[in-house]
Length: 617
Ligand code: CUK
Ligand code: CUA
Image (tube, rainbow, N blue to C red; front, top):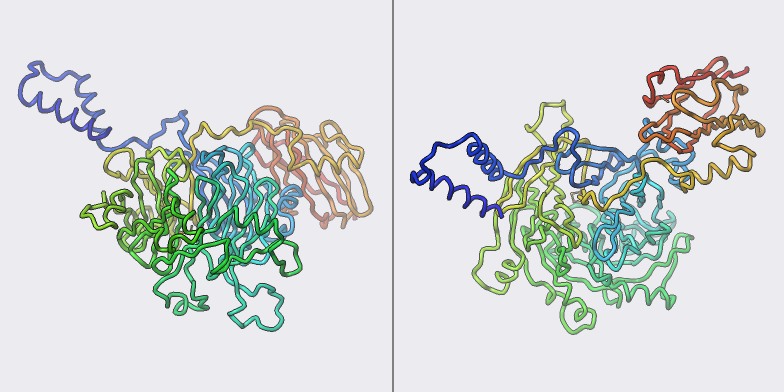
């Protein structure tokens, strides 16, 4: 399309040059020439004031622990979704509702989020959930896309450091899959043998996407890194970077080859049904044995220390990115049936191993047969043609490299618009660069990351935008806005505060109308409503040392009128969205007059939206 534009443009210029067009150029002609030239340069990432972006971006926040919503192509940050972190503005991690979501990890205030991926139906994003892993505390969380809040969190047992995460793509996301990275003894009880490395294992984790409970785990050889699923609902694949089970760097990179583990979902489910599993560490999660020789898995040798694992969007290939090897290993998914039937050898499934440059980490796709691989060490994106790479592997003399583009600097993940789904549309590529160095005004020793936007709609990749981001986006997805339908206000049947409403019911309180203090021994529950710019209660009284829970229901129905609640000098603050009920607990440990106030700017009289807690000594 673009080279066609170019031909038209040059064609017109040539005609003008030849004097065929006698009339002088009109302003309109100049304008259209300029327009054509701009088109020539790149698609514009500019989204004018008042206009909306075409794509939702879901960004991992790395060790900030959050997820961010970006607008693409403007690269504007639209929202932050606190997940594994603790958030001052919304009260995430502080409110009773968020603590319930966090469950057994409610006391953990931080996390390290890496891989946000949306649920799918038949290989297309379905706009329902985004799942994300926490490497730091071995957790997986779910974000509900109708409210864009985290609604479930699970600590994965028997593993340490949950890293790669993806979803089952077809027929629908029944399972979320993720890798346990750090190998540990299966019964990690600090008793005998914890220094005996031969007892260490890594597990592949399969989670029920609806209940967010463990379905089963699969024990593997080596440790695991990244993972992805096919488009048939049959296979998952994971890279392993430490097949040696080394305990230090030298040991981890000693072998020339590591492997990709292929998991057969049907074989795993059959083993589960047949009761062929064990349990460990006193929990009841079934652990299947998928080590070498098992019917559940196959091990495909690849050059050492592979990292990213990506499925091409037409569903034909798993790609393992070389990291220490300059190659990407292309595995034919169509050959996996034969591999599991022992008709071919593991390496027979490899149909290409193109050499791309130094430090290939992750690969993205445009849906037109091209792949885009980040080269961490070269600070480049290599664009290459998959079918040409396959021809070259067969010995044909073809150049599969289409272009190498400098990026700034040291890229990790990259992602194309809808590129991990069937609907890869080949418009934009985002590259998440780990270093920004000289690209922005200096911000002291700590510098932002640099998320670069690249136009891939034409034959040639064009860098169009530098986007600074705070630590540390690892991965992202870009979803067409038509797939996501968020609510404007909460509905009263919202599950995330259903438990709070149940407590109110037990207290005989109607949160939609009552303003009441319920005393329950040393515990005090303060129910109040809010309507801009007032709370339903402008004062209440407790005793010094009481454990106070403030439960607020925001009666406002107007979109965007969020209230807050902050008890001054008590370290608590929360968000109450329109039609939402939120609650937060603190100890009344200061006598006298304590003001509470609304901290979300809601009204011209927002400053006046406050009240007194009298604490009797
Ligand atoms: S990993 Cu960060 S660059 Cu956690 Cu997906 Cu590859
Ligand atoms: Cu309510 Cu500010």
